[in-house]
Image 1 (cartoon, rainbow, N blue to C red):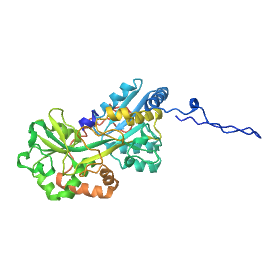
Image 2 (image 1 turned 180 degrees about the vertical axis):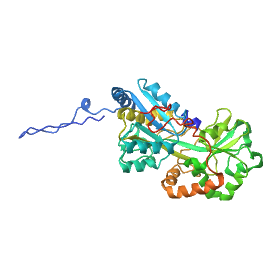
Image 3 (image 1 turned 45 degrees about the vertical axis):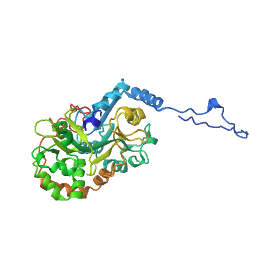
Image 4 (image 1 turned 90 degrees about the vertical axis):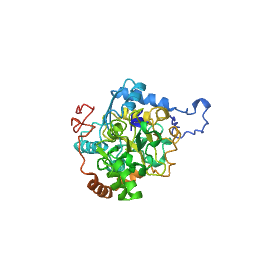
Length: 378
């Protein structure tokens, strides 16, 4: 999702002391002693000082292809220039396994994770491996996408829908059945649904609504399948490929993103948390608080906000207002791994085994404990 992935988050306590045998009358505090409202910016600056004192270092694990999180890193470092930040990007399904392994080995190098694998976070909370923390902006986050106890929270919403070549104009496919038109034979490109659970969920909704006959007709169009949702989007408008769904973004000026009006599509809260054994907890708290701050949610994320007090992107409805999209659906789908794996196995019969290198780590350098995209091991 290039547009959203690159474009792509003190009350004083007064005590009353009484000496033995003394009588103390309660007094109403004067206006000067009343607690002052602390702005989000004030809280961020306090966290910034703490993060710098800690060493000014931060390592974030994010999905899904290198470059997609650069917009977040750039905005964060611009605001907090004393911070050294690496956002290590890989498929979420690789990062969650990497995190599990780091925890098991007692060798955690990641501070913050924000991933598509939303089903991991309740599990990690239950396992006791997340740091409880309610960032700046917590009270404004949609209740549906945050842990009530403060162990994890949705940070922003990603969406997969249609990406079509700009040159198609009004002839671009919008609804799922439009992709079956004869003129699009040999011109469609998709991400392997058996390689990405959000894409798999997209296909699941289509086969639930239109049956597996729809999938058979779609495959009769002889589409190309690739690894990585960014790769499928980037191919649209270049060469012979003119349309895709189950992705987002595309090359600006070459491809356009549209939402189906009737067909199902997918959006979900990209969810984040601080690991309990994070090496740089102050920096992690600063990052999550910045990302959920009203300023960052309005100016830096380029997609639907996790906050109730930030408007939807231009020309879009509120994230919970679409009749043909449930932003909590992906989490529900992924939480039943037995059913998911059963459906994935069936889809595999139709599209075949996944082929190609991991576009997030084509040289295989990330390994077990990466602290940057070059594969430096922490």
